[in-house]
Image (cartoon, rainbow, N blue to C red; front, side):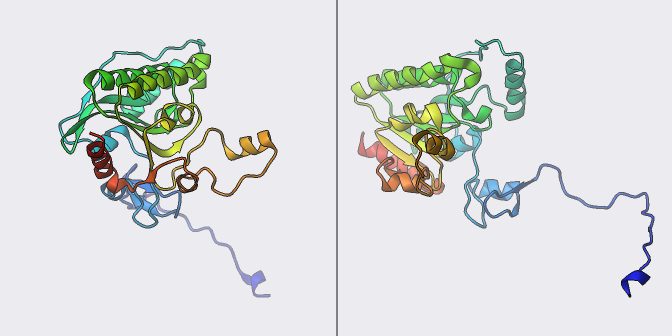
Length: 278
């Protein structure tokens, strides 16, 4: 047979590295269409895949660039440090590493700024910091922001992205649900506008508290929103759930959110809502 006549030969490679000029860390893979994309191209396209329209998650700084007028953002400086109530050995190390990696102090940034000239109090969460989990500092920062909105009589805007409460801080992390909810009750009594914007993903205690309490609830396309994952819910209730029941599109159809807004239109949509309720 011809196959039997094939002789394997070991061809020595020259001790020379191939001349491939690909900058490290300049590329990203789309989770949806699997295309390899140049990061700067994605950034210039509002962090959206130019091929399939998949929404990438956004760093707090990038979100501020898109929503807040340039030069108008003033961060609330509360000088809070993340505590370790359960005295976990690795938790402080993980927080330190994340701060160095993301350039963030915690999973949320809060402050004042202007949207097309209209002053607001804004909070933006970041999935890159422990999946945007809500611990003591996150709860305190959001509560303080709500109180500042009441004191300054300003609209409140919160962009949520979270995996839920921060279990590294135990029961105290769950108490932030009650704290933020109580603060929002005072905001409502003051007759002030609260717009909640749900991004992918918004889960757990954040969904079960301030993220779902907006006077108006917006969401980005295809954002996953819920309390627990599909498998956990199905195991708990013993029933199958409809396909895509936690997507923004499904929740809009069933009245949980008010509108799905494309990323390019978010700033103007929020601005229009502020004017309508001014």
